[in-house]
Image (tube, rainbow, N blue to C red; front, side):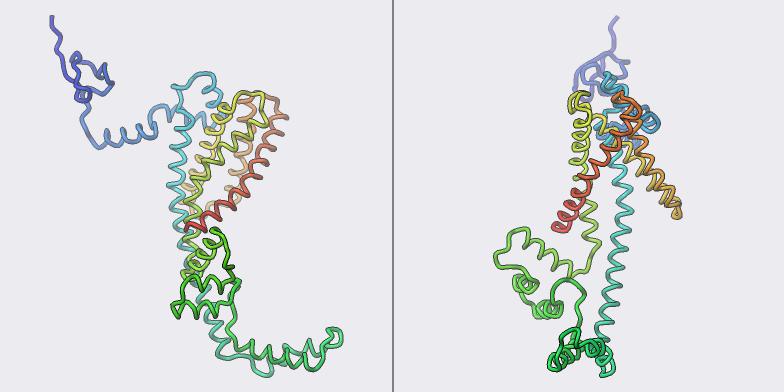
Length: 354
């Protein structure tokens, strides 16, 4: 009896009708395109969002170190691959974080604009009014009363008096580190950036990074937009994490150098950072739902991640409680030693690139 054959739409090879999947390429025999199928395939192909994710999520949250240990034992298809889990969860976290970042950027820009406008009003008021004789006398009194101790003669006192009078009628600066009156005049007159940089204090033989720094400083002075710098900083964080995670694995390798090759510690790091991003994502969701979410509870939850690390190290590396606790503390401290300069470097790169 002949069996009916059908042709695969993907590889165009024939196979027996009734098969659910093509035996040659694996595509589903009858895969009607619906919205559900379209989005499920997209997510599962790029993020491996399938049954393995749900099977891995609960152990990730409640059984520290379990997934990493099982992965090394060879159960690599039963649970989601550590790198895939990290990628998927980090994408969710940075998506949620983008809403917080946008709100902070707008808040900083509003605050800066408000402060500069307020400072400008004060400056304009001082410039218009200047200092009257009574205000000058009040400022001069401490110098006159202590002229002997300060070693001031009459001519020096008169010079100081004139400086105070002139200074009272001069527009004060806002602590940018350069004469803002001259910079404003140069900007209004359409002077070139090169001339302005020199007035700001840049040397003629300055290197690339120094020139870039002054260019960004002038840009910030013109726009007064701190939110742009913050946005550039936040945009750099995901890239920085791809360097910090391997560094964390390297620190583990240093403290557990007899516990396998570097790849073992990298597996642990992928799962641990997946847990961290999951916790931070949950905190963001709670903050969205409950604006008055207690700060002390957030602090407690963040501190609990160290307990998770301690338990994960205990299970994964199979060492004693005390030794695992001590190594957990040292690993955390060493990582933060790297994290602080890394944060400054990211902030500097963000300022140069915003």
